[in-house]
Length: 312
Image 1 (cartoon, rainbow, N blue to C red):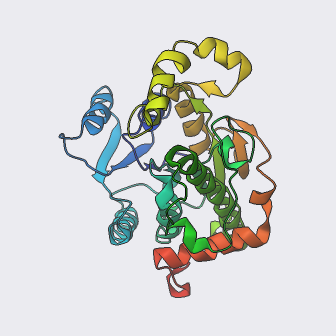
Image 2 (image 1 turned 45 degrees about the horizontal axis):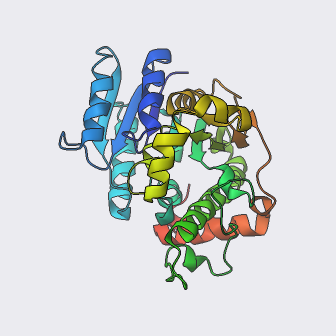
């Protein structure tokens, strides 16, 4: 069923080919695309607009949304919900939530701040897609130096202590992995919340490991120089060989197509849970701890300023 697909971080290296796939294969949907900087001064937003220009008959809306600002997120979701109620946008059928700065837990905060959004789905429901990684499972990612685990004090997720001794790469990757672990836990808690509400039970949530993206911008910008060289001289030129050893090694275009097929419910309609590529998969043992899932859910609601009166 056609509706509005909201994609956050829409000028990201995975999002742009995903949007290309959405407009190419699902032209009856409305694409609501949010970026931190919607001006033409942003080169990545320019690239996004060049893709949209190839589809003059598509309904694609680019809006600015700073996920680092809770007030901006609240204002945006409230205004968009009103647009849907007033008929200026069709009902939501999918939300794809990506973030380039997982250490800030923007995805979880955006999700909790979207309480206005849940009634904005049509009666047929839809899907919420969150992004994870094999890094959330200790020992599964070759870049891991320190295994990811949820801290006892969840405030440590957002109030980072200095590392002694300093190890920017090792600890930085661990924080990335822990953020992906928290995202998977939050997804399980969200599904329980949705299933308990009859009006929302047709909305499903999934967390996907989209694969190790050889052409990701994250390997080239704001990253240790070692990864930059590895991307340029090893990963990209040797991708066909590396793929024999790691079947999840792929391009952003391949991952983007999978993500959109999940978001539109074409792939695995009605299913919930964790996926690797387009295959239903098991997440790490720690991520399946229901007590920890609830703790992440409650704490992220607190960070987002959500109270019981704000819930559906």
